[in-house]
Length: 158
Length: 442
Image (cartoon, rainbow over all chains, first blue to last red; front, side, top):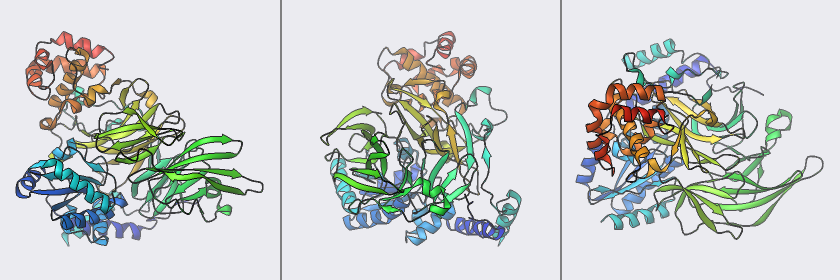
């Protein structure tokens, strides 16, 4: 068996540390708390909250697609980062997938944690008429199916 | 510039810039590494960590996808640099084909990767024999594959492969092993979708290929479905709550999964009110319909547990305070779990007159209120999950010191919606001590 060579030199590890520091500096300072969820529900008629993690590659792809689906439907999309994601990984995943800087807001809303929304990434949660849907959609869902799901839940919520 | 300097100093001091030698095998797991309990905390706020037997450092940043082998001490995992196998006994890592979702078959003959590709495990472990992976069937594509062994006949096998990031689909195939190391693969029928009318996500096949677990979106719950010979499927088990992806034990009796739970023991130590939610690993006994708790981390997350053939569970662990992002695989033995409680105590409200359920939840709420600053988030379900971490000695101390002053608050707080909540405030210390001594409390 041969050993792994990742970061096998001090220089490589130093570079990784510096990169991590640099990306950390880019992270938005304000996580998404319950009070932000309250504001979202008050200020927007409907939308989809999409939780993603750079540790789950399909969720990175899904985040970009969810944003496009919401845009096409004319509803609000809120991309929230896994509360425990590695900052460096999150930054580079967001950049390479051209996610907006606000996609790096960490999910810290207890209301969403309580329903189990942080148990898997991605997870999509629809909201409308001032309330968050009791159902959630964990796991990657292709755009067409995600669109159909959102429309179905919006009907239910309104 | 100042940030740069800070990082340089941090890297130098914490050893993050030193060459990463991946051969750290820690078999002496220290409970204090796992739970965040301040020096002056009451003794009853500590958590008991009984089931964890091993932790092995991972040399790079893993994706959250890995699967342990049945018998060999190997774990296949996806990392930022591609797929790997890590030997849990030595810490050695071998790169393997693909960059996501490596899954060994339950018989350890193949390592599967999305596409779907098969690589013989024997070839992976023998550098002289490494060759290109075999494409399984040209019309079988997809990810999140989970394999089962349907039938064994000498060296030949019938496998079932479930695929699906969503909408599970299934394909059966036969592998014939021939002379001179050759083999042939033949499909057994077409690919098909079990339960096509249900919206099932995160499907995971049982090791015998006859059942699968998935999150039923409309039910809002993780459920188990039996796959019929005619291709139909029947719901056979319902956990009554959403969970992380499930893994079946090799005999099919147990499921393991992670849950995001409220941290019951961070106390006022938690300077950041946001980190009260951590993921921990649980096991569900389908025969007794009881749930047990594998990890009790308050200072880290334990994710995506999966069974090995020896009944032990492998999970991914990351401490919250490790700024260098180091992960490890934990190995835990469910046989060491001391407390198993009925799952319906967690997923439904206690029935009227169900004293054991009410008292157990009261103990969990008492612990939460006494030890955590996150009491605003406390719900009956979370209170119930707390009790799985409370042993009898700590339970007795907790009751003696806290019950009388908090019982009214509990009855009118987190548990107010329970049918017998009002009766809880009439319970004496002795009543609750008796409950501590019963199996239900620990």
